[in-house]
Image (cartoon, rainbow, N blue to C red; front, side):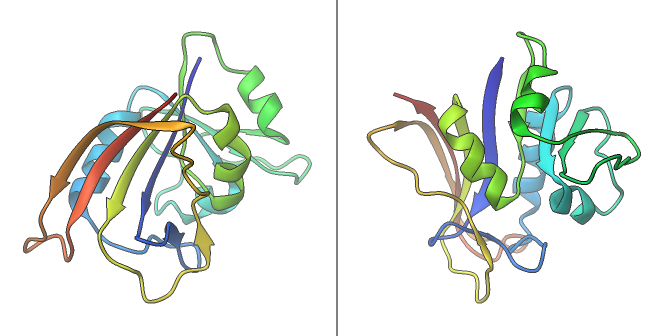
Length: 163
């Protein structure tokens, strides 16, 4: 199984505020869809609740929740990360899509990071991505993009692999 953390982070590694994305970057959303479609996405309950239309189409949706008996349309619910990962096939590509506590929990298990590094600081944030230790993670690719009429600040698609 390949385990990838995918997130958009600002200069301080902030990822959200009040269960919402910090920046509206259409190219980031397109990249997210392109990478995750046809694969498994694993998220916490609050992240699932933040999805505007519920479970994302053309993906296996897995949600972690400690609420016994919780049922979410279009998603499988597991109480722990270990149980969720145990339900995955060896050839499955699993993308961790948030939130912050799940990123912290899954980082030691991850094979790759697919980050959109935003060259700005959100005015308000209440959740952060864990620190990326250069002794553990090596940058594999970087695709820098300038600000434009649809993207209010410069950003880069950066992929990391475990050393």
